[in-house]
Image (cartoon, rainbow, N blue to C red; front, side):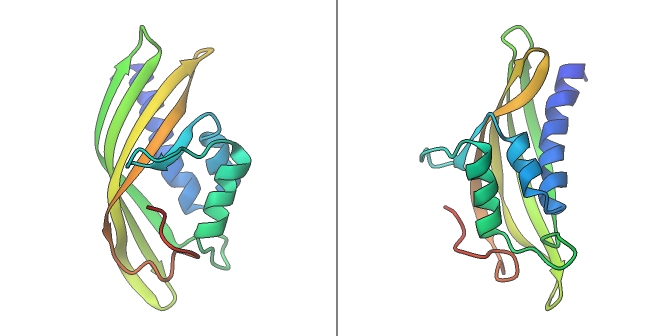
Length: 148
């Protein structure tokens, strides 16, 4: 695996780590240069303030400061074009949750379609599209309706 491939794969893993720790400003910083939105081709949300607001307004946090989730990303298909300084990735995601009143269970599953670019030698997200395929009990997770 090339260093570029590792760096891009680490961005995907870093997202899961940040969201599960409840670090919404960190998630917004990670996605700061990206457009983020549904996989249906709808408009993309951009900017750290808007992205932090999205997570803050939709995701319930518990007294420990986390959403009580684990985002598991699998089936990664990563294509890096080192010469063009760009990459694309497709992956599956599953959100597990265990909080008071909700035993450990999968609550959401879907896919990410990501684009990346390397700027000044550093890889970053340039686009993240999410597709929701399966919805379970999100009543302990979502503060508002699930974005489509």
